[in-house]
Image 1 (tube, rainbow, N blue to C red):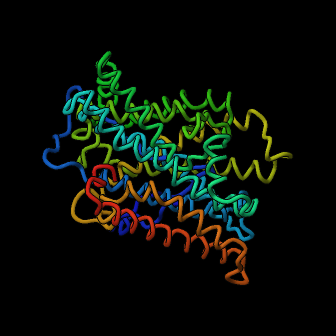
Image 2 (image 1 turned 120 degrees about the vertical axis):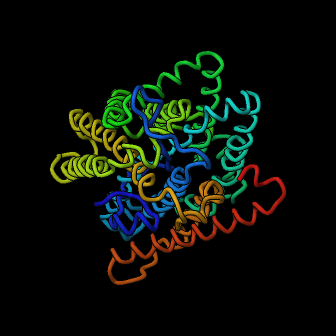
Length: 428
């Protein structure tokens, strides 16, 4: 399988797309690494904000929709009658990197925002931009989405109001993909505290990331090693299935420190203006995209091979030995680091200027992310049990395609309509 990136210039050069992830209850998002350099440095990029970052973010939002659209039709985790084995590879690809990458991207401009606005205005803006959507999503959108699952499993019962009341009082209070907003808000609050108490820590992290601009493998190896160190022990302790939850707030227990690392790597790079050096479109990291692509392919192939071994050769695939878990954790963290850097390098190298097929999504991507899970689950509920063709695999592909296209259209249209309401643009 190739690597993910999807813009016109990039598609012309790199036809193959890389998508893979594991089934979880939500989806996750992006990362960046850079800093000021010692000695030789790439010429800073001045002027407008780097378009590659916005396009990478929009691309990840599309991956989130793909991820949720195909989950019921995976071979090993399907909840519908039809399945398609390659959807398992798509889910593995996505789940293994895209939320971590989203955190990195989200952290990239945090420091400059704190410096420009001050802590009070920064936090006020974060609570408006993240806290309010999270509250609306957890209180209204996610119960509406999960009611479709309730109908399929248990029937209408006492109705939606009773289901909603049970969700918010007894639980489980599923937050779907918007768990990301709650965790990102917590990370932003932590960044604000660090900005007040020990700003040098973040700037030091940024300087380490950009210490050798002409040798980006240094930053990559540091990033990969850190990913392994913060992820493998927690995965060993908690496993991949455990979530920490507090009402609608949730985060996968073994990934909490991994997400925190990626976020603060992004913050550190932004603190030393690494978007103008390490993450410059003309920088060494972007120029050496074949190296990161190769690292992504190797780690992803190893990850898929390990999963295949578990499914086909272990006596109990649902309870693999600890040694298998440890190797899986190492490969997971390695692929996450490789694909995150690869994604950034590809967008910086091939989709940083001119127009892009992702540009129309830029203003609506956040709203699409917030809303899409409602139409996704209801469309899957409506399609459940239907046989569209005599071939089960073809039916699974058609169902996933219908869900993706219609959910994108519905959530995009709803976002455009909501943004016409005065004041809503400040949130969506």
